[in-house]
Amino acid sequence: MSSNFQFTPENLEEYQDILRRYPVKRAALLPTLHLVQAQHGFVPAEAEQFVADLLDLPVVDVREVLTFYSLFHRREMGRHHIRVCMSLSCWLRGAGRLKRHLGEKLRVESGGVSADGQFSWEAVPDCMGACEIAPMLQLDKDYYGNLGNQDVDQLLEGFNGPPGDPELE
Amino acid sequence: MPTANLVSKHFGNEKARELDWYRAQGGYEAARRALFEMQPEEITEEVIKSNLRGLGGAGFPTGRKWTFVPKESGKPNYLTVNADEAEPGTFKDKYIMTWDPHRLIEGIIVCCYAVGIHTAYVYIRGEYVRPYERLRDAIRQAYQGGVLGEKVLGKDFKLDVFIHRGAGAYICGEETGLLESLEGKKGWPRLKPPFPAVVGLFDCPTVINNVETISHLPNIILNGGEWFAELGADRSGGSRLFCLSGHVKRPGVYELTMGSPMSELIYEHGGGILDDRQLKAVIPGGSSAPVLTADCVDLSLDFDSLAKAGSMLGSGGVMVLSDSVCMVKALSVVSHFYAHESCGQCTPCREGTGWLDRILMRILEGDGRRQDLDTLLSIAEYMQGTSICALSDAAALPVQSFVTKFRSEFEYHIQHKSCDVENPEPALAL
Image (cartoon, rainbow over all chains, first blue to last red; front, side, top):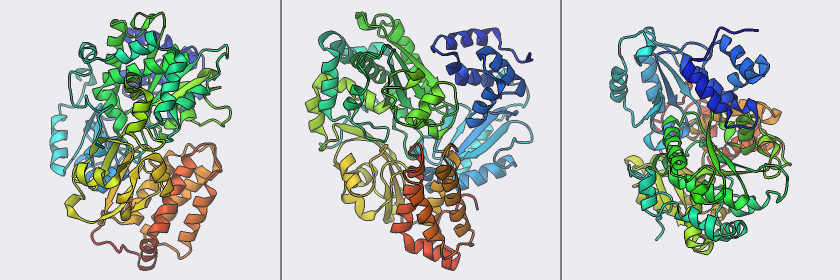
């Protein structure tokens, strides 16, 4: 089977570099999926076949791994993705309030994308390892903590550029 | 003096992650000494003497773990550094990788030379993007500076260190789940035996140690195992990073010698209870550790003291709960986490965590039944010792301890369909 998904030349090089780290090809699966997601924003179905072909795996093995891990997305997300920590230490310091506020602010429930496509967000039950700044969230690569409602508003404002081309990021 | 700075002294220092600065402060001297002045067996001997224990949570003696690696297996040996820091309430390894990545690399060199390992993988949780970048840059510097690669610090000893990013699964912090994940599979834990020291990564002998555990090695080499052992308590050597969170005025990472009093951590370092309320409970070692009532402040923070008190030191994640907390709601937050993170492989855990979560939710929604508490306890009992890994036990222990120690709050909820705590934080899913 062939696939419509392709790595950019730079990412193909990065992929070759990933392969060199492991004595067994399959071990490159997680880093390869990370690379797909970094390039495309999520892992589309056609990329599953692409990755399976690269690593000589049945596509069902790729699907199995892809769906086991919560950081991989299988559909388009907002330009910025937010994860709110709902673990005990964050809950003790107001994660419930943070979650409600974010839902109201973005006018979409956890798991959804805001109408302008700018933000997607989810409330996650697993601890993100930042209880010292509870309540906290991760926006793209960074952690933000000690968040009151106003802090959240300001934070979102700062990321509220014109919707559209992710290449501009 | 109970405060310590063995692994935390560079926290907050922007320069410490630069190789040149780290070396100018005497960095990599321990690795040099290990490589050029010690035999591998001597290193292991010092680590055994130091009473260094696994600081990821299990507390297994580190040096002894190394001795389980067979001498002549005919296969390569591997080191896997567990940086999949995900036990709720734990955030210390993030600080080491962010502020002092060279200390971790130096510790990796010491361990690998002692055990005869030429390839190490650091398995870091996927959410830790910035700590990953810091560590990646430090490893690059180390290769460029001759610290890693074909000849480590000029010695005829080859060592490669690679970082492997996880992708969001608590179970991958379990050591065999981690190995599966590193091999490109879903993180389903393996049956033991065989233990990873014999059949581990790629079916080869593998040492798996936590980030902080490895980061203590340079100091042990420089000052000796006995020095480290004496700093700590009986059978828990040296110091460790405590992650203080929840209802304290100053949450954060504090390094204390093993055996320091809980009261010092909470009241001196943490500044006491938030809003000057009363202390109600402490979860002392990550959310899997059984909850303790307020009188626990007299306990010593070391592995044996907390085990004796019916809990565990675990990952060093100390979560403080003030009297504003409804214990039914708090437990439901914890139980919901385990239901979400059970990998689904073993029936008692997959079904048990789901039922605990649903029954607690039912109680919170006002549909609790008189027999629910006994049902919770009996599920928790059947979940222990009946699954491949410890997640099932970890999910059962909080339920047992919360329901036993705060039973009247649970009974009140079932009877009155409401809380007997004034203005509590609302439950998450309601």
